[in-house]
Length: 175
Ligand SMILES: [Cu+2]
Image (tube, rainbow, N blue to C red):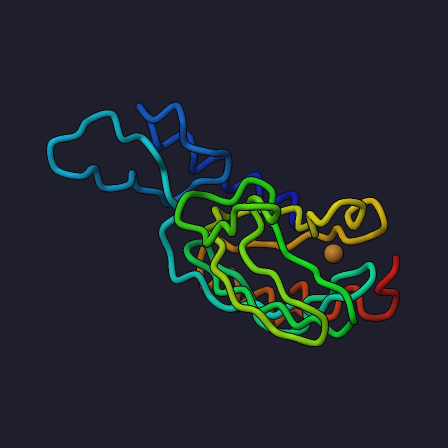
């Protein structure tokens, strides 16, 4: 099901001519606005309603517990149900995400043990790899995927079909 959806994105991409730097899956994208007096701005950002997604995390797993993501700025709530610090990075998130920097690098949100954090990930439509980038944690199991839908209609169809990411990993969070 996801594969055929991504095929549609690829078809739409053909219409976006003249922008060689647009990422794969960028159905609806716009360049960042250039500050007055500058030139050469070619950063491309996802445009859309975004949405809200909630993750639970612990040593060493993620589970998406609520929400659905549509392209745009997606509010990401990270509920840490364990004792150790973890963060959430979407590999390839666009400019406009709340990149933490420092030792967290391109993570968009982090949370200490039994705390909750909120960040924003700017994502194009597609299936994204989600990791905790604390050294060793990805290899220990903190890697999952999250689907970002191109439109709210697509997201609604996935909800009605019971095909969203919510609780997908709950039965076997270590898996
Ligand atoms: Cu971690």
